[in-house]
Image 1 (cartoon, rainbow, N blue to C red):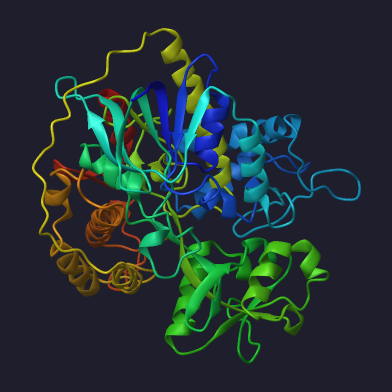
Image 2 (image 1 turned 30 degrees about the vertical axis):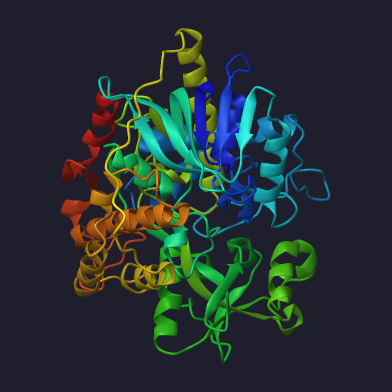
Length: 530
């Protein structure tokens, strides 16, 4: 098989930004599990947050980010992110991407929850992700090979150096392939596909996290999962995202009688931080009360939100009626693979960017529209680092003996929908010890760690993805049990308040065990090992 200088696993905004900025001097391979456009980035409606307005400043963006994430961040990384925001938007504009403008020709800046300023840039109204991904795809150079519909099922680790030197892949027909590289980057997105209610593409099931964990990388903050307050809710199922930008335009959350449900809950009302709004909707629905987004005050809704209009029409929901039924669903993972400032993991040669990485910029609850910004920022940052590394080093001889390990053929796996239902019920918006313990016991019946230590060469792609789902679900359940407090997106019914002692504690999991680590040590340790 061909040898590359860099392999990128994933096709969202972080992956494509990285690929775009890597030097054309080096051969690069981009692998994605489904199609290039099957990513959460492509689905993103809200926009990109950046302090480019006349009354705005990176310092204000910083304060809003810290406040929304409950001061659980890597502050240095947050400052770097928000300070780079305006230049990243300018770079996209100069490369030909057109953001929406107001009648005076200036950026049309939107408002979203927990922001103090109008600072959200959009493309195509509510189709920002689609436009950005399509634009980045047009900038990919010929030195980048692209493989779609390939499942990366194993990271290849050199037996002596313990460096990641390649990936093992299955194609759509179950055939195995091996690709070698000096640098392997995981940009596989979050964990939404583990939950029955989600805004994510169903293919996003935590693969990168399971792969990294399997080779010994550290995984951190898996308890912090954001649930978006407003997914379209039809016939007991969620059917697409209703962007926070709709509430930014004045829409209100109401019950069936038209009573505003957020009025006395938070000073920001319907634009409170997402974990607060999602929690309130969850409580109302738990009481048997339906919740709607009242859009009757928004003029020309179809023109402003064409994507949402199409989603509603596909589900026979009338925009003219002025009410959209909504429910919360899994939206974004704040934790993930522990990385340093450029994306290096605790395994040499292995990197992570985007939602699959825990960079520390989102704290305990991501500020709206900071996710696309994060992907742009770290994709470019890692590219600069790798370009320098590849420029001053020669390709290493990679190929090693890949003698098969013992395969297990008599294992059982859970039903995918059952797993998703249990995750939503027991590790969803509101959690408690008894339910998390039930979930953990159920997951332990499927010993994913032992099976993944054996050869997966003969396993089907479907079985492997289920193994990954079980493994990632266990990481979430373990962390959620250990954090005996409510902080940001992690809500414990039995521990409803923040615990000051846990305010600087990160839950770090690896094959070596679980560690409660103080915040100031976390990134230093990753840097030492990288």
